[in-house]
Image 1 (cartoon, rainbow, N blue to C red):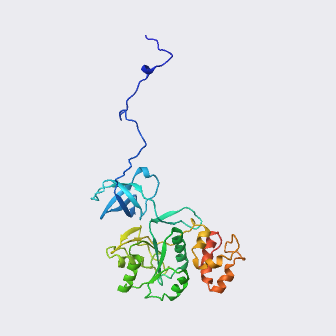
Image 2 (image 1 turned 120 degrees about the vertical axis):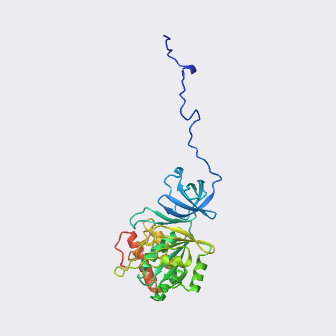
Image 3 (image 1 turned 60 degrees about the vertical axis):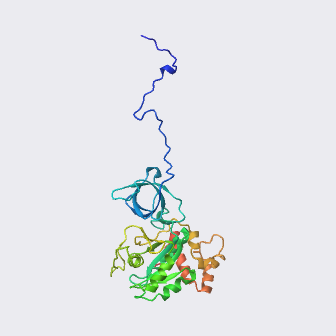
Length: 333
């Protein structure tokens, strides 16, 4: 028997060939430089509808994207089968940098965020003048979220055939953003004004259940076929007729992103300073406040300023939101 040396040389090294041959494994992923680009128009249980040219392609998220979310409005790059034929499935391999992100939190005490849509540039806040009664507090929350995300707000007051819009329009006129009033059936002139406000833009519709959002969408996008619900006569609340966000192409140019009706809009992810910034009509009064003023204390300069500028209702609206953000008891609506 050959006696083994205490020292090993190159001849003593044995190499076991694996099933994959001798090619070394690598973490490097394909660059997908020539991957076609798409626009995410729908999200449904891990499947993404992506518009590529004039064809909607169904895709799943590639493993290398990890836990990063993909939402309606995202611009993505696709690999795999992008034919859009029945049963085909592509992969989202890259998500482009977002220009804007609209977020909401579960409630005002939870700072965790949920991305609603990406790359929108306008928020259309839909509010009924009656049936259900208008909720100014909800509108204010949407305005805070819109300004925080860098979106231009547009307030659409529906059901003007049931109640006059004068009071609501006067309440928000100091903020200086555009407002439109609509009724059913939608007059041709009103439809033209709506299209003019939406054309060439990516607009996201936000509204509580039962305010007529789906009816409005069907009037603007004839092929949308969004389900229309009714308002409960006892609770004054509507049922959810849209279960997920979807981007709809407008007849001329632009996109309308319809979102499910929501009961509330949590602002737990937005700091109190950002809440105050959303109330631009109070900015002059805020400059007189002492440093670090929370606008809830007795020495807040906004009280005297609001009395002299007939801004009491707007100050009350700001303080309702700030009270919630500071865990104080908010005023009732």
